[in-house]
Length: 257
Image (cartoon, rainbow, N blue to C red; front, side, top):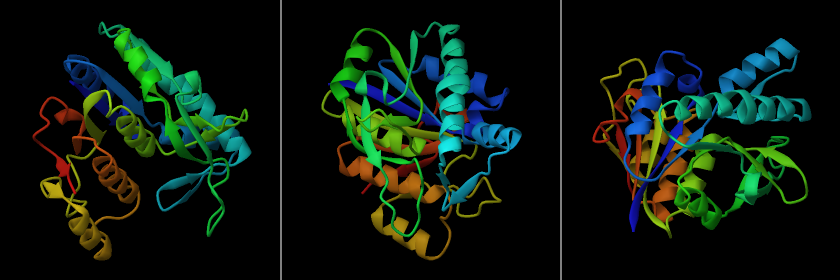
């Protein structure tokens, strides 16, 4: 099977006019088929503030009210997605911007209310890997915004790290998939104030220990959990690294079972 790279880039990178061009240069240089999944939470938060809509976050995840869903759709699928697509086109990449609703690529359901009501937030049920493979086979580079649909006409906001993991898993029957989470730090850090404290490798037991002692918390929790889930489902390798290290994937934190 061919090798395929799924890159997830966080909002702090895609919204930085200095970091984004460098990342897209590196992404464009990756050989073979590839997919880019992006966030954009900071832009959504800024837009919500401008429109007078409250932003609520719980354990690194956004609570999505009906008004916040409108903002998320406008920002993720519109402004952020099309800016990335346009910039990739200028680098000779035939990028195609999509959400999970386009082509029925990612279907899910509204998250059940347990301790927390996350509102219009979706959990993924299935990814149409064949549809994505068809786009890749036609020469397109999918640029995926973190919105899915429920099959009943409703859009749902979904964590972009989860989208990246599910897309990577959905393509494992067609490719040898490497999943890379790119953000503003060089990897998972033992000391959040020291960029030289990268933890080079994390497995299931190491994750349990890092969570128990508080080394890993907040938004990094779902990122590592998604990584471990992806490896369990057949993704060849998961790497958490900085946007500036995209051309050197031996760096960063490597996730295994």
